[in-house]
Length: 251
Ligand code: OAD
Image 1 (tube, rainbow, N blue to C red):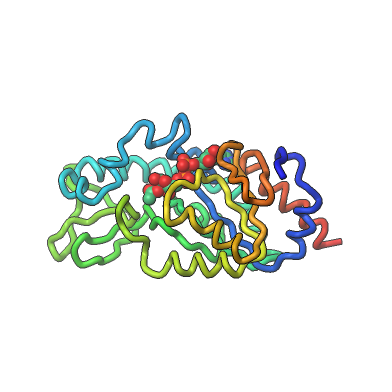
Image 2: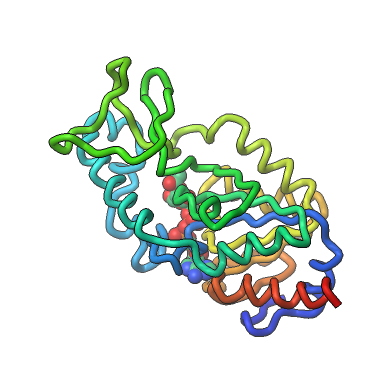
């Protein structure tokens, strides 16, 4: 069922009100209204920058200065942004549901909004880690003479995010898959669903009998095997959805 944001089907609200466990699976679209660019839209990061050069370990080792500069640039954008109405609505759902957030985003905005249970599939840009010993560094890094920092063990430090060709953080995908298999309803919010293995998660929920709902501004990114499509910005759709279910829960 395809619908504009303003029209949320009553059937969806009824099924949501009957649900206990829900999953929000998010991509960069959920942070677009916070001013953080997505990856593949017209203004997307991968339209202007090369994923091969900037999100790849070998390239980092060849040119760490360039990769660090790009991550520091993204960090400044993220640091200056705030969670938006979509992130906040996801927190509101915790009032009535057992909510798991599974995000492909590295921007930390679900945590900053106050979500209690967030699984970060692609790491977190606010952290760094040693390329050799794996030590994790939290907190802001200032580059001296624009030189990438080094760990006490002597090796280069890198952003703690997942690059192409790398494994997801240990155990996180497995936990995400378990949440999808156990949930009653899954919202797939603001993602083009083209990066694997993350893109397999909605199928895990579907095959376990959950209702899967796409929330996206672009109908082309709605996968037709899913039950509902709410067309619109997540910052509009998710608060509207919450208000509708709140009425059913409270009266
Ligand atoms: P994409 O740029 O591929 O997709 C963004 C999606 O958000 C598109 O489907 C847009 O239509 C939708 N969108 C944009 N604004 C929206 C809004 N306000 N409300 C709702 N939807 C909106 O980004 P991702 O799917 O997140 O991986 O990309 C997945 C992964 O590819 C990223 O985690 C990153 C990237 O390479 C790594 O870096 C490993």
